[in-house]
Length: 340
Ligand code: UD1
Image (cartoon, rainbow, N blue to C red):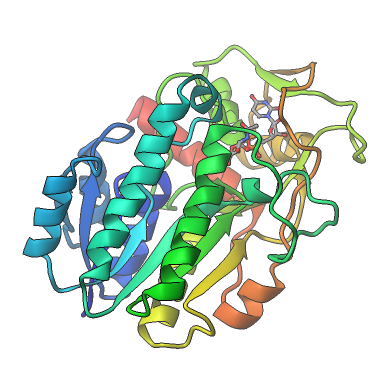
């Protein structure tokens, strides 16, 4: 079976994708610098799939090591590229760190892929490229808006770099997957989301509050023009998201793609408000969540949810898990992480 490189394969979405790749029979090599993950994640992946993926601790900014990695693994057929920095606030403070981590590493990998006879490339993009879209649900044709942060800009620039490269490099075929809000964890609770420090994202903040690490959840604003006044997002179960990567990779490896560079939204198509997420958590966990309404968070958009038609029809993929499933698995994971 084909050998696939997964960069950032020990991270949240990366680890779940490695599981799905191995379940499909792919041979996986992981590169991760462990800046936002630990080697223990390998044990979780191995416990779920019964197979330990190859792993190299490597900083993708180290161009010489990247080159020798590709010399050693010259039979790689595809790359799923997750490795990137992703904290929006930090990116505002440290833009150059973000441009170096997210852009220069992308260029180095593409330069290596250019040398291969053929390569499939899957890029982690984000619905952040749409900003506050003018029309909902958001289709792939919605205009890309001025980025709100250097992090968001790295996703936009990354897509442009790949698109430009594919125009003149026929041996590289690529798909950019624009994720909406990935949440939840594998149902085994052997892998999951492990934010370092105070979580910036809603779901880990909810589970950490319920387990007692955080005092209360601050709900950022209830005066938005939405039915209950809180912001609306499209929360997609990480296992559904991971499976979409395998489907996208198969599409490229089986030459089913319609262009050398394609983009797909990955979401459920359903928007949920912050309070609906809180209610879903309370329902599946049986816990009462301590929360209070505070002021708006700067930079938050009001509402974003995906039009999934293109992913459904073209990829033949659709989500199978619900928000309740995601909250249940996130809670189980939090309990395992904290209590063992
Ligand atoms: C955030 C990033 C986005 C990034 C995505 C990755 C910002 C402004 N946006 O998106 O660029 O691609 O994460 O996962 O940081 N909320 C609370 N209380 C909290 C945390 C969140 O009320 O403690 C609310 C937010 O206001 C928002 C929703 O929950 O309405 C989801 O927030 P979050 O998980 O941070 O995701 P995004 O803002 O969609």
